[in-house]
Length: 184
Image 1: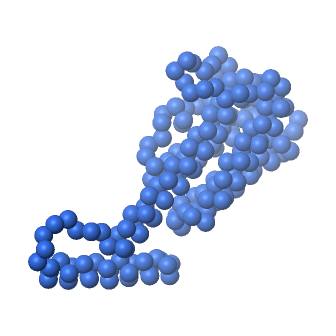
Image 2: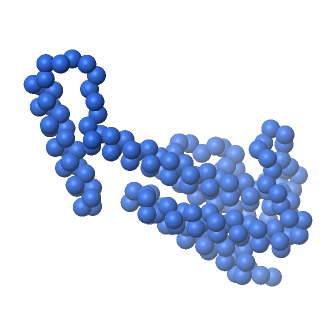
Image 3: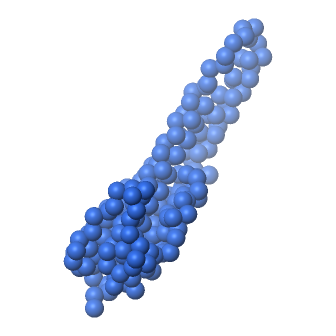
């Protein structure tokens, strides 16, 4: 437990004890106001949930981009399928971190060459007609998402921060593989 965590725990315990004493001696009936520690804990929980939701949303968007590039350029499947699987695993791991279940479509295998967006799906992700340009755009999306995960580290609780750091590092490797590491 960190020093900040111990302080918060002690403050919450002291506030709860004080609230119990006041509750025992108060003759007034009515709704109880939350203590400062309870309000702070609620604020922290809301901030944590929002951070997790943003992380999962960014990862899902990246997964959609992979799917769009694979649908537009099926010849890139051997190169992109392993990276896409990694991104799908990131979506699942980030989602299991407290934001709820991952939609089954997000963890599905790479689309086949005949897979095309349907009218019921969200707006299709635009993909460049040139495969090399599409790879460059995918690398830029990876970089943006990876940087976002790295930026979120400061506000994340320790366990989730470690997960975000791992996902951000993996995204940086993906950027390298998309731009330099796997050139034919």
